[in-house]
Length: 82
Image 1 (cartoon, one colour):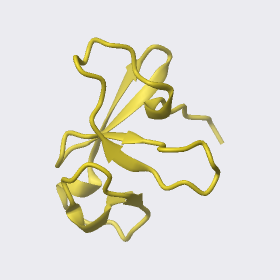
Image 2: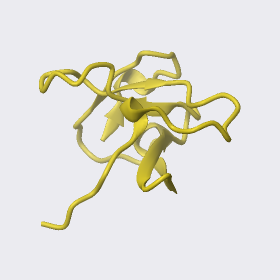
Image 3: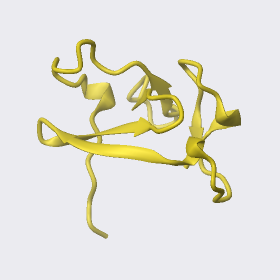
Image 4: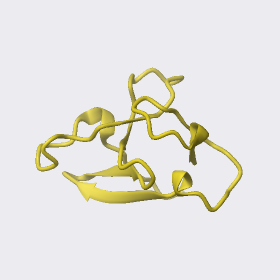
């Protein structure tokens, strides 16, 4: 996964891209409230689903402020074994 153009702007899109060494392709994943939060290393912004429409692009936005607030549903991710 890659943040488009290595942007640090709120609203920049996440997309699949060729692997590279950039921090814009590195993410922190933390477990919060039974779900996972994904934060882009280069920007510190949280990945967010702006809409629950299947074709919506994941973007980066500010996480909960203060961080101790509960994570909004749009920023909660779950992983499944394949």
